[in-house]
Image (cartoon, rainbow, N blue to C red):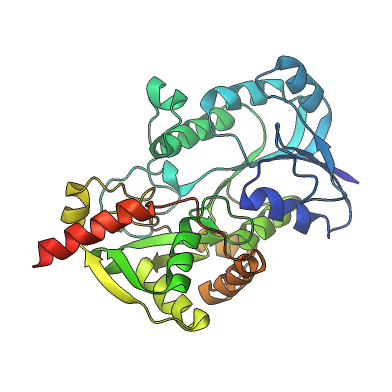
Length: 331
């Protein structure tokens, strides 16, 4: 029986991975979810709770000899430094990083490969909670792991979607489409980005547990070149909606102070958040889930939950003001 420690959180992969791994025999699974209580979502799984800032918790958690440690949650370099310093033994440390680690060298650089340069991380960024410092922080976490002496594997997904997603980045648009009416779309909805279906990521992690791999870093990307417009075109017929769309040029959105990605989910002013996954497909022998298939599963998940109001994106008030200003600008 191989022992597996999952350093988890309440993210989509934090729920999907243990559920899928449970179906495979030969693994003794322990989930450390910090102070989150995931027991209702993951019945039958052994849970440990605590605070990774506490040395006693680290000693209790990392002193045993683990065959595999799967780190889904570490975001801060100081935490990675503490964790790797306390690991007594691990057959492989699998770190779920992010394609945000890459330097945004050009707004039109498509399909970046694993060899591309990663971001530096300043002392201020290392401590920041701003979502836009996630890339530098994850990049520094990678460097700490690489220098730790532990056998490691780094997986870099981007815009992970599917069931149990807490970010609502994709769901924001699905909710707007289902609601009908007028959609304000940035830059014709044509800017490109990559996306990772959560079950592809979970399957990759499971395959990595016992498989020798020729590389230590992989982009894990299901849909290399997605866009808001492609999402609207795919979801509208499934939801039986035909939405009117009003284009919001990037210059207008910048003038109005609308933030990329956070206030307008999935909008980036450029096509540089696209990533090449050929290495992953070749070495793992996986056929990525096509977007329509992943979308259907995702829509079913939200339908079962009666379409809650998304927590991400513009507030209705700010969206209304932007639409009014956009109409006036067009007169």
